[in-house]
Image 1 (cartoon, helix red, strand yellow):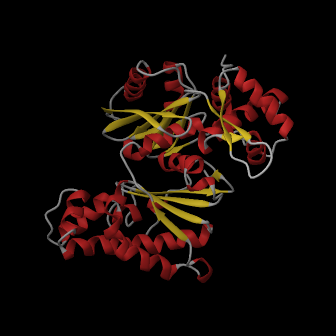
Image 2 (cartoon, rainbow, N blue to C red; image 1 turned 90 degrees about the vertical axis):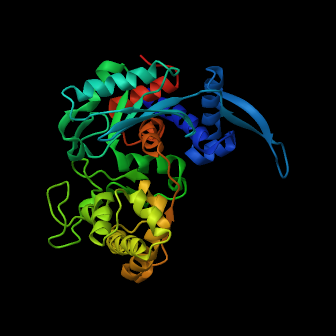
Length: 393
């Protein structure tokens, strides 16, 4: 990496650090980024001159001179995040510190003859309503070859080798990064959540489908073709229900939304959605049994993944967590029983969820590029960093 590129990466790392951790002193910045105090002083001086940083209050000291804290100046960096589903798009504007500043939802048909054109126009419409951005992150329920290339295979969308990134970059004239939706959540978790204190963790999602992302040594593990983490397609039932992937008995087909509703109807419960089942479970023992049995299957399968990957912590996310109190009855016992003895005390944390969380994860693809020391975001990441320090071509 050229000296100029290293300098740009370090400057944007300082901005991202202050965006994720809040105001810090120069000494704390040097410690967090393993930089010399002289280097931090030089770089922060340049960033202040460029209007990106400002001096804030003095940090209390137990002795000696109080340290001056630095913080981001105004809107130092924003990104757009887009979640693509089979029915609609969710688009959010997110600040460098992870705060969602605005959100939009619009219908979307991935089977449309010009689906990518429709996607590009929907994003362009939002771009007209917001200030200049660092870039656009897009997450999809499928495999992505490379974040910076952005070719997508998403069976639930009916997409095969779709050049999403190329089409969006041509229309939007901005850096665009594309990723599997669960991996995008893991990037957000690494930037703003449990990943700030853990370098090895799992993100598990439940809802319409079931997914997992593996973060190892601080990086999302993508596999040889970007398809790692297809946890929902682990086989759990011989001759089980047909899955969207074409196989029978996948975890997703059994405990995903469609599987839960089918199991409930097979027991005579008149439900149309998982939310119906959740409402019924508040006073119906049979509905609670459906959740508990699904929770036990999910727990046993999750234990197998934990035994293989050996994470420090597991974070559970997704629309399905709205009913976690009913899943928990089966999940907790099953997962602990199947874990290897040395791993039975692993922390499994269920986080709150809202409709913008997927799209916020997509925006994190852009906002995480200052930490991209491995170059996973490629040329698109370099362009984002250049825009962040005001040197975009």
